[in-house]
Amino acid sequence: MITVEQIKAARGLLEWSQEDLADAAILSRPAINNLERRITTPHGNTLERIKKALEKAGVEFIDGGVRYRKHILDVEIFEGDNALYRVNEDIYETLKDIPIEDRKLFVSGCNERDFVGVGGDRAIEQFDKLREAEIETFLLVQEGDTYFIEEPKYYRWVSEEIFTQVPHFVYADKYAIILWGPPVKIILIHNPDIAESYRKQFDGQWKNAKIPVLDEGKET
Image (cartoon, rainbow, N blue to C red; front, side, top):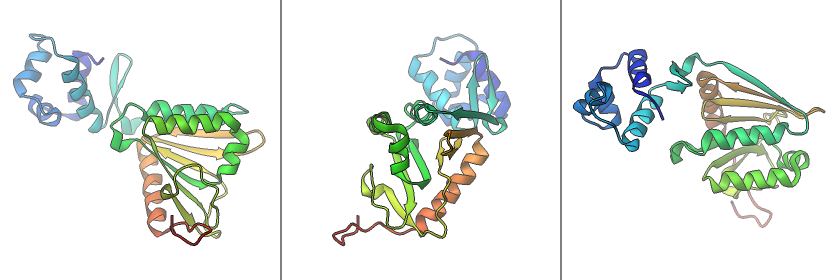
């Protein structure tokens, strides 16, 4: 749980007054004032509302402090047989506890035969785990591909000319690139600006892509 010191530091980082924070968290200014002066002990729900309001404004809470999310540039590389498993676990851990409307994974350059071929049964189990956490996955696949693991409504077709052979994921503040190798190598970048840029790119392609048509001739 966040501390009073972190709340004060976060307000300072955003240049927010107590009233600004109260408005964002839908609380009263006296409630924020009493909390910061340690006159009252806040309920867990109150701290969670404050935390979500500050995170929405761009603050990240780290061990013992806070930082502005746009300053993050963390790069991690997963390599080898467990690479796909590790990035899928990161997707799950990153998205499972955020507001449900933000639990979205965007995948470009997707050929799910490759994912299943590399990940096997464990990949299918992870896909199921994402569904159970109500994480929605939207996928851009090559026109004509009907090998679908998700419901057809989550797919769009892009032409062969613009279909990328290098799959990449966007989720929350993260962007991941998959190189099939061998060995499989996944480069995971944690940066809000990069993630937002590729999310906008995905949105543009999705709007212009085709709705897949099943073999029986009906749109999915």
